[in-house]
Length: 414
View 1 (cartoon, rainbow, N blue to C red):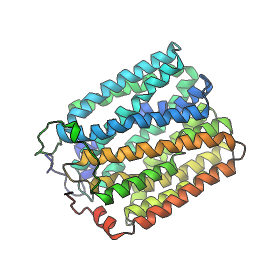
View 2 (view 1 turned 45 degrees about the vertical axis):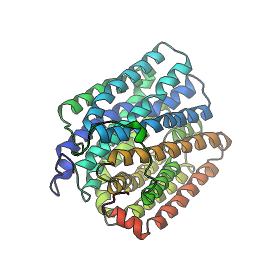
View 3 (view 1 turned 60 degrees about the vertical axis):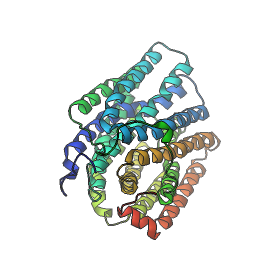
View 4 (view 1 turned 90 degrees about the vertical axis):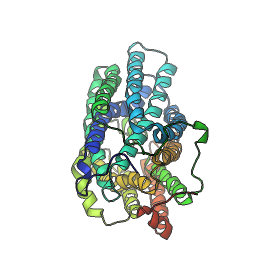
């Protein structure tokens, strides 16, 4: 049982925890999205790093994140959610500030890469803690709406962050990475003054790291987590790979790419809740499969025209697919997790997703140079991968045992 009693039906998406986490998500995404979008452009244009090395850098950030996610999830369960979220923003502030100084003073490329490598691990633990707080304070029926509100807040930040980041990059790349440092301090203030502890009441509070392990006996959860992580591989070209393709093949500027990501954020903000109502009767697996089909088609359409406005419209439809599939992914993990192991379950899921999804960037940036002048072939491969994973999730989701778990039936592993 959580210390905090979930809000009454119909009021969950507006409870104080959802408001607080939504606010921190907006602040965080506003600052960090610009850095995430601009860093591959900076490394390619200024430091003259190859696509393959840039892809490997993103892969390494995820590899380093793995133990942070696993141990972080366990610590969240043992010592509480609030203690963890109070420690992380100052660390992220220091890292981004160091990165901006390293860029300003032309530090060696290895220094810039090393600092960037350690930002993502702390961000992954922060995301786990936020997810656990929302799961603690909402019911099964209200959870998708609550996660959707948080996603909307994050994407409003995403709507402005990359666009402003593209503008700042035209002045100095230093400012692009100084912005998330400052933003971290603002989100820290929200955690300090608004977020109360929601830790499981009967926990001892001790941290025993040697007991951290995967819930192998929960085979339904493990299978579902791996399958969803594979879906992240399928959609993973939405990010650095697409950014590099548009800047290199279609010669889009940093500002145009920032505007493209802004369209993504605006479409989430305007259409996430209407999309929820439209597809609300679909099961989580079927909804995720439908979202992957949207991704597949819109990825393929990228290859047909370099017109900036065509790409913006295409990205708007890609975002509809994102609206369909993303909230049930996060919510489904909370449905399957025992109440006293939510940090662990979200942490394990983060391990799978952080292992598989960056392989998409490595894969995309590795084959992109081969098909840079043959975009139909490149994006056709990405289309086929998304369709294949959509079918896998659709049929796996038809199983009776998974349906039972996603209905929120209690599960306590032996």
